[in-house]
Length: 174
Image (tube, rainbow, N blue to C red; front, side, top):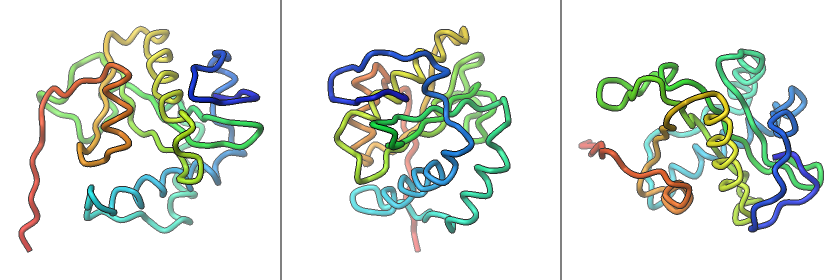
C-alpha cells in the first residue's frame, strides 16, 4: 500500500489507486518476483525452479505491466517499495484446472516482499489489499497457491482466512 508509514498494526487504508504499482516500480517489482524464487529454492522449501535472470524478469514486467487482466499492488513505506502482489481472475491462472478452479473466483497470483523488508507486515497488508480488491470486483472467493514448506506464506495466508482445500504431493526421483 502506498502510504507514509507501515507497521505491524493495520495501517490506514488508502484507496486502491494509491496502492497500485506504477511503471516506475518495474525494477523493484522484478526484484521482488526474483526474491520469491530465490526464497523457494532454500530450505525448507527446496524448489527445483530457480529464478530467471533479472533482465528476463524485468522485460516480462515491462511487457505485461499495462495488461488490464492483472492488477498489481505495492506495499510502500516512506517512498520505498517493500513488495508487491498481483490479482486477477482465477481463469487466467495456467496452473489451476479441474478441482483447483473454482469458477468466478479472484486469484492472488503472486505476492513477495523483498528480504530486507520482511517482518514489517507488508505481506499481510498486500494480502489484505488483494482481498479488498477482490471483494470490490465482485469475486465471491479468492484462491492462492503456496508451498506449505514456505513458512512465510504458511504463516501469513491462513491468518488472512485462506484455508487448504487440497494438497498436491511431489517427489523428485533423480
